[in-house]
Image (cartoon, rainbow, N blue to C red; front, side):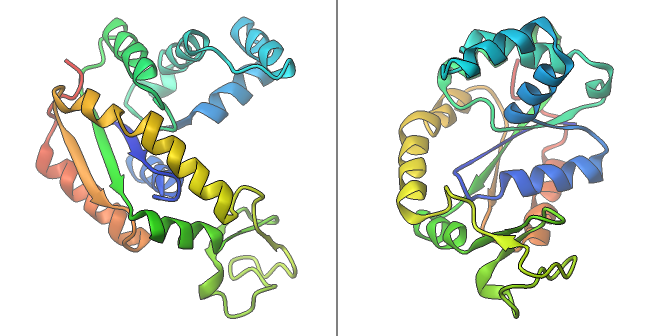
Length: 222
């Protein structure tokens, strides 16, 4: 099973990617993870990317595409993958098409998590992360605001710097202008699975798996 998870910040892509990766026994691949791994492994592409990042420059699309091709060619991806955080622009989507064609991958599903903008703002401004176990919680649901419900860590919960309202609204604006147009790009290419990303985590997972089962193994990239 090969999946691309798509949706606005706060729609639950990262959470669902980890769950689906575990259930389907396929790797969760994110742009950040690929960069960090390539840099850690000191591959030629990783060193080139690090040089760009150290200079405060963006890693070019062509370099990111090469890193993705390198990753998707690995044996661990032979039975599928969950792709999260890429593509983010139409140019990146076109480059990803080329990679899929070169690797003869033609059974990729686009899973789109839909989320109301105001609810996303509410969700993210109330997001808290445990610095002990890494689990994520909604501040509204916490009975004890200074204790992690998962590992019982005291004063271990924190709010990310980018989880304040002004930053979130700017991220949503960037998403709408730069990333959302990818949906139009993919419309003529095959299957799209639309899921309400604001349902409970378990329900979102169940709905994704149900829609994928109904869809069968139709193609998104021909």
